[in-house]
Image (tube, rainbow, N blue to C red; front, side, top):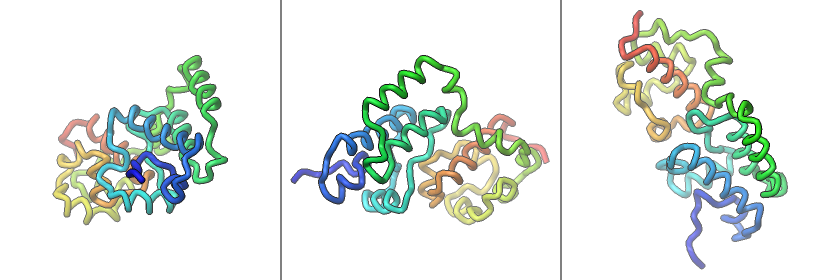
Length: 194
């Protein structure tokens, strides 16, 4: 048999070579993620074995930057573990059609919801990378950041999601929190006042 494109393939298709319209829906969700992330590689630098393990443990790709919440939810629906839980293509078309007819439904962005949930922005008073991570309750990653060469606050301003993955920041919620905080730092300019 031929090789399977692991990053785009549903768990049951990988395990049992069982290809159905439900496994196609999974793949469609991955392609949708690629489009919304402007061609980012699914699961970045992770090895195929790590991707299989992560999916099995419940990991799903986080929302791309500026992705509407409803679109990421549709992706997550496509990536349901149980294939009968995934939407049918007809339902996907109906959902997308509703979204096109109601552009206001696309306004809430997945990455900006963190800023709204947490109106306090302690980043305004930090001056070091360590203080910043503590302020956003991500202090457990200080060693990861410094080992990867991110030792100053300026150095984190242009960090990407793939760099976070390389530093073992693999939980979607943590990635979102760090990246949305980086956006706040960027909006303040590189010199952060204490």
